[in-house]
Image (cartoon, rainbow, N blue to C red; front, side, top):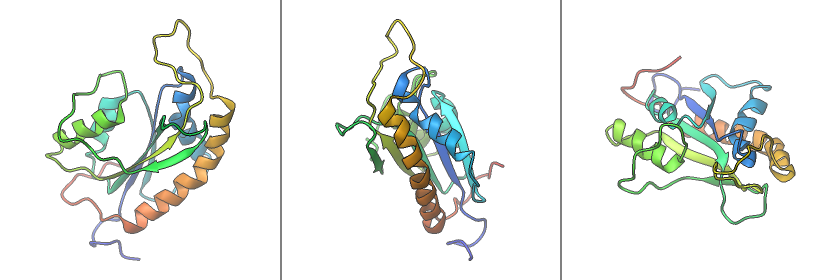
Length: 179
């Protein structure tokens, strides 16, 4: 099948984001690790960004047609609830911290760096049970039971979303494609 818009096929970035030392905040990296155990379609890049917001902002400008961010996302639902979100960005937001990951700030930075253009972005969020701020005296490695169970539900959902993004995305024009 010829990709929409002709030319190079669409490319999708699946970005696991979160801090594995802050309990359920490690959801995104855990999902990416589980996805690496399965076949990945051509044009799909799985990356565990952890808390490297600047790296993600620059990667979003590498000619991707779409990006799927996988993260813990408190939304007031029962722990382990998965939500697919298409974020709306405010006109201006503050710059991200170099060693933190606020997805809205990262997207705003990428949009600024990319002259106002970004690929289509979806977020697969999981409602955390354990929410840490990073100010606690100890780290907590490992996901709570409901969030750990959500990882196995998230994998086929990510695969389904990626298939849809590959089918419906127009290849990014005029951008250098990263391998």
